Length: 368
Image 1: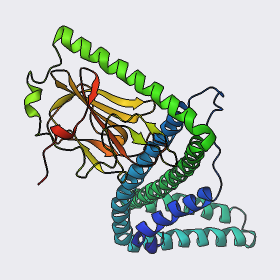
Image 2: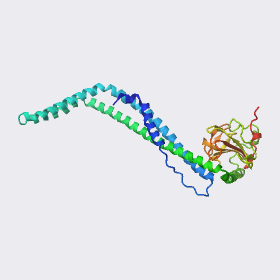
Image 3: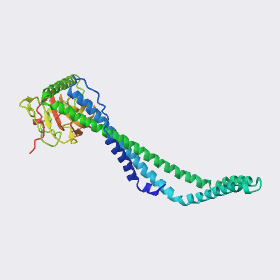
Image 4: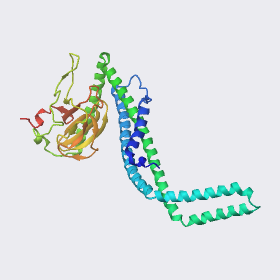
């Protein structure tokens, strides 16, 4: 095997994966989005699309992790195989020379048999056939060593093939993600079109009502069984809460004017227009009572702070907490994103008491 193969493992791996990526990304992936019924909510369609995007991104991360792991194995295997190959080069030449000599002798006898007396050539051939295994038997350990080296080289080739296959899968998942992202852009463009804007706003109001009912039920349950309280005096924390992100809200509590319109919409929290991937922290200690996709809010986390108080964090890109988890003040519950949003990356935050939204402003630490 060529020594350069081992000296350029990373470049070989990069080349294999790069070729797979370039071939597949150059080809448009097949859309897998099912045709949605005409009556489906834009936010329902958006949730379906984003679930597929999330799936393909998870697959990409898994592919990259597997490629990284296989590459490390390949480097170690290559080093071992290269060391063994170098150490046995002389032995390989000796055995190759010996076997070559036997083969030449065998062919010479076969060519000259017709010049010899009857039976003499065949007797010599039989003697050679018996002598070769007997002579090589003394080098059995060396032959076994060479077989081991060859097996190591085959394992390296197998790993290279495996990495290439992973590269193909990564390329396909990358292409699928790109297709779904383009579909998402079209969904949002349609929802924001003047003739569709009112419909989208009405659908969003319905999802808000569903969230209101869900939180009210949770608040009623807390009041009935008193099991999920964190503290009986959460109101004492007023003026001490940390903001979910270290910036001022773009839109504060109260009616919000719609873009490119003179109308106002209900706005019962804070909207922070921030870059996707910004860490989002808990404003106070609490228990995670919801951590999932909620139509119209994207990936949503709700914390129960006790005394009937809850905080809501919507449109997250990643959720880093599990249902039922007790978390501390300033704990990073996830990262901001644009899931469920037709307005781009943002964080939507609410503070609620007994299921009703309240102005968060008096609750945060005041900046000097």
